[in-house]
Image (cartoon, rainbow, N blue to C red; front, side):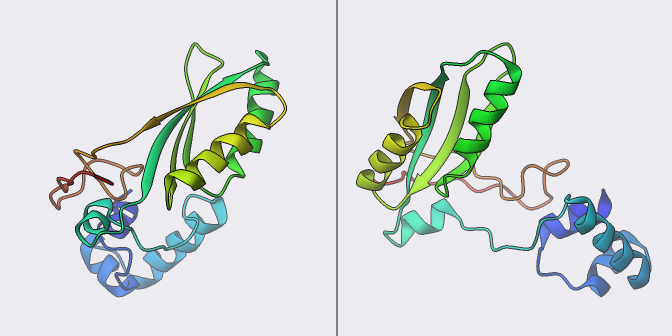
Amino acid sequence: MAILAALRDDGRASLRRVARIVGASVTTVSSRVRGLERLGVLEGFVPLVSAQRLAAVGRSPHCVVLHVVPRVQSRRGIETLARAIAKEPNVCYLFELAGSSELMALASTVDPRTTEELIAGISGIPGVVRVRSIPILEVNKERPGHPVGPPSRSPERTVSPLGR
């Protein structure tokens, strides 16, 4: 977990730097990183884009939460529907909710028109009864790398309004 935390804090850190941070040899860190890649825990190294900075330079994404009501209620049907929705490139996160057959997605597009096209595309997937979109007006907390481990040592960003 220490290797993942170090990479979360600085995804561009060299293996030598990560080894120093976690107190292991470069060979050990390299081997463990390769193992995490083989397991699919690490899927690659990508830049983290800050919604805050995009807003500051006038390039705010159009972000929405999508509430998807499926026709199917079975576990297999929900999983099939989730796989189809996950193929949409503008869907950033897709959540199955405990105690519900409904799905929630977080999506980001370049403009409201593209969001409407995304909603129409998801609505057209067999098994979808309804898609309700809830635009995100302001992001009050942004925590890059959040799915892995405890909070980063670096401060979280307070974000300005999006698209206002």
